[in-house]
Length: 301
Image 1 (cartoon, helix red, strand yellow):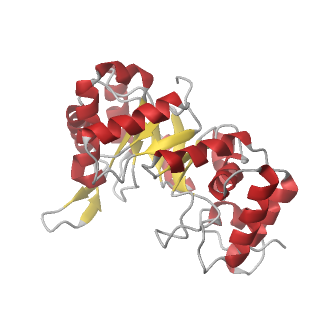
Image 2 (cartoon, one colour; image 1 turned 45 degrees about the vertical axis):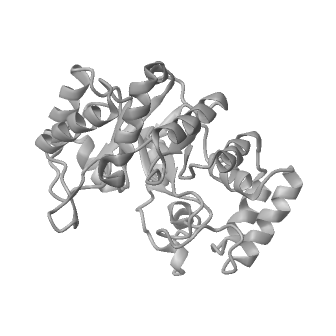
Image 3 (cartoon, rainbow, N blue to C red; image 1 turned 90 degrees about the vertical axis):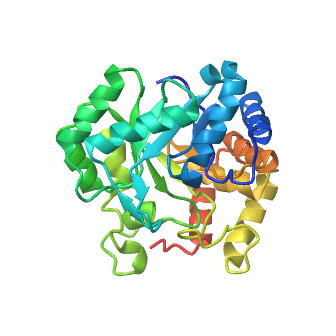
């Protein structure tokens, strides 16, 4: 796997952009050390991929500078309602469609976006091997997969699973709070993920954090939010201590969990992306990390 940035430019929110504006964002990212770009076939019903493709068609020299990641499994019926499909047939068709929209011959990483209850590990293994052998996908990962589903997948898949993209950040801490609150009856002790955090470490599956600054499932950004006065006070204190922004501190909080941890910023504003990049320069002490954890309202026994 090529060397990639620990900040990932997420491209879900590009609906109001054109190719020139996206190029300016990509150019800013590359000029500031961000070479990892994340999209999915369902983002904007394919618009995100198509827009990236327009940029790459006009400026083909960018492709080799970019680590380009997309996802598949979320599809919609004729009423617009979502369902999941991880059949071999769908994976292969989805990748072909993504490559066509992206106007490229390969993607650097393909993620299975969400678990399909009917997934067949043997079929997925065949799809992965075919895509790898044909050079259409360089590496593979998963997104929002729990421990037992990963185990089931790995019972047949012999292609390395390099990462699991899951929601994590100061507004969504269950990935780690269940370990910290083991054997307690409080809400933070509930096994939401079945010890997924340490399982991934043991398996060598990297953590990629999506919606790192959201409270819960798209309930709003944590910064300057009246609902979270203690957290914002702690972030302000840390920002002053490290002479940086609150976003940079929140980014450093996530990156502190391991050198292989990456953070997906959903912002398409270069100024906000820069705040995420600034988080790379901060090394929080354990005292600071646990202080932020407590300030976020999580239980520390």
